[in-house]
Image (tube, rainbow, N blue to C red; front, side, top):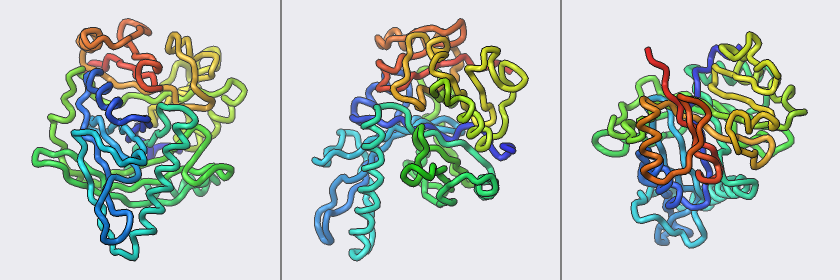
Length: 332
């Protein structure tokens, strides 16, 4: 169980203001793609205008961080935004607008809970196998869907196919679990080669290393059971069964997810408090040289805290609601 999971595909940071988010991430030393804003007319034959949900990406060779914001009612776009025209037959326009409006409503509902990390998608080479495994285990999901994912290349923005599924809690809206949006994605086998300029980040970040989920202490056993069903049993963790000696932290290394009881969060990330429970409290990226990363952050007046000689983090209150951990990558 869980052998069809190969790490993180992406995490989603939902923000209120896309301009502030991209400015922050650039101060953190990431290369951030120009925000993409879907545009389409309100009525058939009308002028195209921004509508729905905008996003931007921090890309790594095998994963990414997505910045997500609902487009405001005025349809304003940042100066560096890329309009993405959506074209459908006139009779399909109302249905498309309704679907996009529902997606934007979901993003706004996350923001009503808190601004921060609400999306965690695991990577898999076999999305159909995952779907079958989850169904056999009685886990609700919306089935496998196909999308075209934008990818930055040396010649501009291209698209490549990807397939995904979202896990659903029967007591929540479709595609939702208590902690947010959770699922799996599979990229095309012959995916487009990304331009390395978009993965050579000034802060030395090399990959998406982990996602941190915080849960109320009494709910930890049930959360561990649920995540074990999704991702397989813990492994390569602080103890043989994947738990720390006090039983408050569990690592699901196949998906690069760490589950921490609320009482232990401040021990992992000093000073941090969960914005809600359960909730994704932060994520980690690996870096080539933690000293270089620290120097860049300090030069950019970014608040940081240390957790050890090879790790530091930007607190959630300085990073739009999510703690961002920078971790020295392992040599060899």
